[in-house]
Length: 394
Ligand code: PLP
Image (cartoon, rainbow, N blue to C red; front, side, top):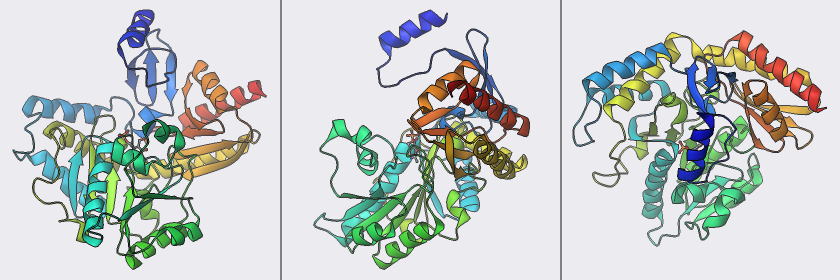
């Protein structure tokens, strides 16, 4: 079976992904199995997506019930699951309103369109500017790609949408120099998931807020990867008292079911008018009922606290390994181990052989984003495999 599926992949799927070997067939909790029956401990969780682990019974039951009742109506016809989820999201984030998208990128696009309208109201000649950060990741559609300040993603698609200025994370001088009355918005990830797990300091985030206020610009916080409990808070920005103008969510929101959301507050609530944005699938009854059950389960099972406690254990354990790990970044269950030499991909491969799934965001950064249901024993198991692998690689 494995060979046939891998051949079909090579023949019929666009060659945009570098995959790990194997064909995966089943998951439960923090474990996943391949077609040959090999078991893996999953510390990647669909890239910070499977918050409840694989096939959590509460989520499966909610999906099953909603699928038997009503799956999709389009946004021409209102459904209860959509507004119930919106109400819940506003309660837990402190935001006011929601636009439902299908994933992180389409949620980012919504935020950028709101910011563009705001920019055009300030600069009707179209010379407004956006500020984003070097090593950021906001998605790969043309708008989101212009915000994603990484050469490897942008290089084949120039010219990009104009108006973006890029600044170095945590560098206040650059931020001050980049912002002025033409700035429409700043978009920032509290922790750069694809950019070396660089973690924004609270002071830097406060400076963004202040400079946005001074310059009548919008602060967009991209919580696609950090949001919905991953750092031990519903939003990573909740570590501070900052209130963003726009928040973008996806990944863990559906714990594997595709859904994204752009949340607005105060002055951003009514920028988009009827007909100015939309989505066929966004906010379907099935997606929203599923996400609602995910949020209730995160709450009901105390997973924010688990993310804080297990995340601390993981970080301490990684630091204790020492060479080649020289630094541990991130918060909660979003951690990066920085290596003193470029062996991250070798480590990922050796861990996979030993039944542990992690990934490398570059040659010197290992990323750990396990499900929020991860147990202390599983954290220790991950650390044991890592110690063995690092011992072997020398
Ligand atoms: N924003 C951030 C911070 C992300 O990490 C990602 C994906 O990794 C995206 C946006 C794009 O999300 P998606 O891949 O769901 O479109």
